[in-house]
Image 1 (tube, rainbow, N blue to C red):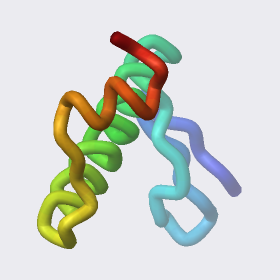
Image 2: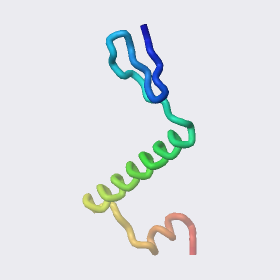
Image 3: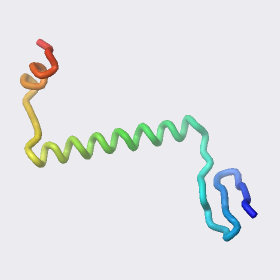
Length: 64
C-alpha cells in the first residue's frame, strides 16, 4: 500500500519515495541549483586558468 502524506509519499515498506511541494517552491529550488552549478563552474574555470579580461569578453561578444 502506498500512503500519501501532505508533504511526501511513502511506499509499502514505509520508505519515503517522493516530496510534495508547491510549484513556485520547486521552481525557486531549481533556479538556485542552476545558479550554484554556474557559480561552481565559474570558480573552477578561474582556478584552471580559463578566464579572460572584460575587454576580451566584450570583443568576443561583439560589444564596444
